[in-house]
Amino acid sequence: MAILRMDNVGIVVEDMDAAVAFFVELGMELEGRAEIEGPFADQCTGLNGVRCEIAMVRTPDGHSRLELAKYRSPAVISAGPRDRPHNIVGTHRVMFAVDDIEDTVARLRAHGGELVGEIARFEDSYLLCYLRGPEGIIVGLAEQLG
Image (tube, rainbow, N blue to C red; front, top):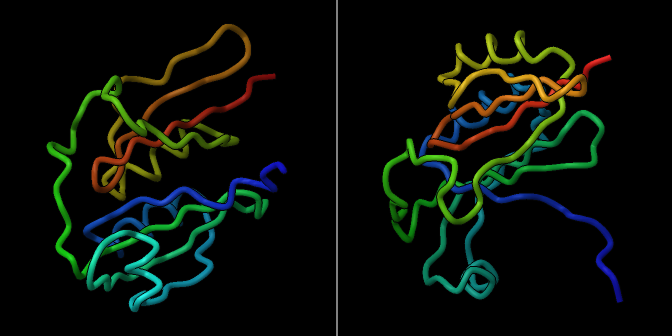
């Protein structure tokens, strides 16, 4: 038995509108938004009284998705400062291939995006950077050269 695919990556947010706007500006497409609650949500998450809004965004090729979740109950638990360094244990970034890294960074700055370091060149292959978006989410951007 083997997995069929990776379906999505889930990210908990406090400001759903800001998170959706950021990822749409990046180039993702909003599939939809929904309210989730009920026994299945409690069973799946191991929490009691789950009520949350989710938004599903997908890459233009349709192969990758992010599920953004804003919990109304139980209350969101802070994971600490949102400007944590890149070398913290746990999920540290989601990487996207882009066609123009400088343009993408400029557009995302208008939605609160801030470079973690700077745009760096990896040999003659890629321009790479990490950008901190809403909720402190680190997004990696990679532009293939040549």
